[in-house]
Image (cartoon, rainbow, N blue to C red):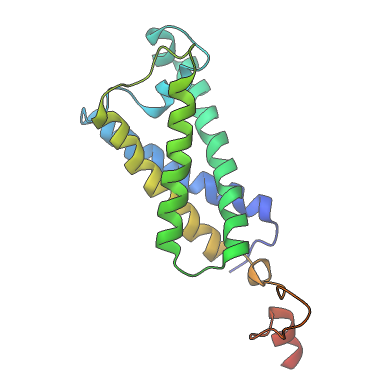
Length: 175
């Protein structure tokens, strides 16, 4: 399988994959009346003032673009997190990054005074958090699986201690 060596491209692919899963969970939640409105409608509320505008096709596209853009940014951030901390404990790192990003986005969207289209009930916001947790899990696993091993090699912390493990390049040279 071809591995991605560029961190930005890897973050984009991983973030978009996570966003698809997040959107599916959000739609299921919205269709089952667990949330008042889809996350796309809430995101569209940043730019439009009327609920009908946020529900329109243009509003849905606008909200979707914001959502996917933030998902890409989160994917890039996740790749950098993994390159600094390693590919172990993916579930924990995925949940933390997904819920953390979701909390930050929900806070920013809800705190903007011009956003009149925001859910205020706990069930809707919990639904968003569940979908963002799934986003974080999928994004983190995809980044770890699709990323080239050289992205995750760490340099020694200082020049005094020898590394305890060989880097990928050193392993290849030994063969």
